[in-house]
Length: 191
Image 1: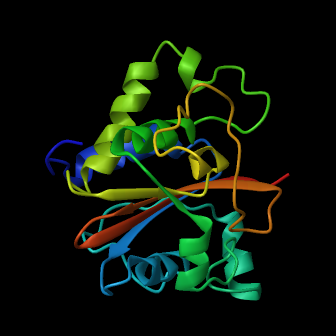
Image 2: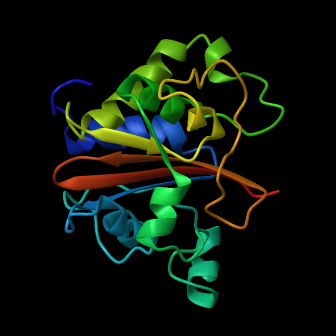
Image 3: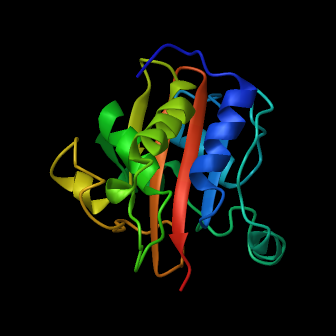
């Protein structure tokens, strides 16, 4: 990762180019607890705001679920222990590939990131988004690909889920953790 040179305008552009067209959730929150998983729960429940006031991405169709079922919808009601149990650590380079891969559809992707002419731009946008968390950031994923390796090649194949965090057919997530912030980036296959 690079130094924290990302500003709000750069973040917004990169985040929108990367994830606006797919069913995703992208929010950040402050690190308020020694156990970062408690902060991740707060982001999923939307009980904290982005500490920098930067853009978030979440679909309006989830708003009714938040009012009707639970504030964390489409995420299940989870404890910090559930978060830890469902995630595995990955390297910063793998996190960039995973975030870039969330820019594609789950099935029948006609143009997966690995084959796109703009592959380098997609990876650069993912790097820009994650630069926010600095060079000391730790990254975690729900992907089954990280069960045996902390540097899986997320671009080598189509999206595959892992430990479910929602009631959807499939979901896949990335958590970024720095000394003062957490980021939650999730893709959903709601079929």
